[in-house]
Amino acid sequence: MKKLNLTDKLYLIEPQELLVIANDIKDGDVIFDVGAHYGEWSSIALNNYKSLTVHFFEAVPQTFKILLKKMGNYKENIIFNNFAISNIIGDRPFYFYEERPGLSGYHRRSEETENNIIHTTPKILKSIPTETLDNYCRFRKIDKINILKIDTEGADFDVVKGAKRLIEEGKIDAIEFEYGGCWQENGTKLEDIYNFLTERNYEVFKTSKEGFISLPKFTKEMEDYGYSMFLARRIR
Image 1 (tube, rainbow, N blue to C red):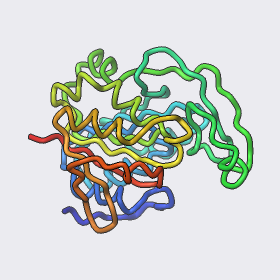
Image 2 (cartoon, rainbow, N blue to C red):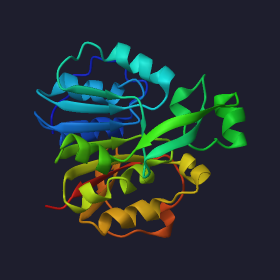
Image 3 (spheres, helix red, strand yellow):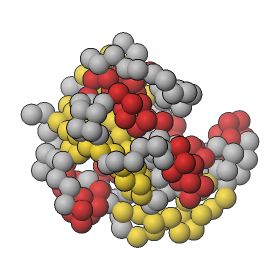
Image 4 (cartoon, one colour):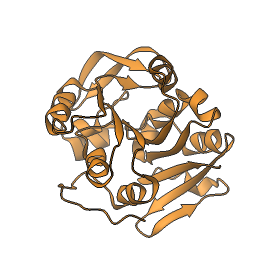
């Protein structure tokens, strides 16, 4: 495990994410940061590894402008994309919370979340363009993703489904995704993404401060919608 040099403000980075960065990245890797926000996750990776190629995907125009500003010092092998990654090509309505942009997504948050956490109602952006990873990589002739990091407020499974060809052809080494109450608000289940990945030669781990916990079998107790992070590694 690599000892990370942490010089950035880490207010949006969980300890579990640092574990993935320290264990699953190596010099020269290709990283896809889907739901990049301000680029905090990838900034740590770029500061600790050499010759990375990072593809950023951030759909919200206001957040994308800040991403460009914050990541402007990284000149080489950085690709910025101001559209969403999903399982469809086209566009989708998007609920944007100006005060808490990191909680924005395809589905409106629950009344409880809006009242107690966000303290505002969303602005509806009616034409967020969407792309699939399969199509994106086919068009750009990309045949390997070492780390696919996903943080899309409950739409993580849509991202994974849109990379079905890449996954089935063994072209994505590891996939990090978040899980929590927003999945319930979106009507998606951990069991579905777990089955999708394990049926396609991936081992799923729950990440914790202590390390990676292998999940050889899905149990109903896992579907609790409590905030947690997972890593799927391709079985070689």
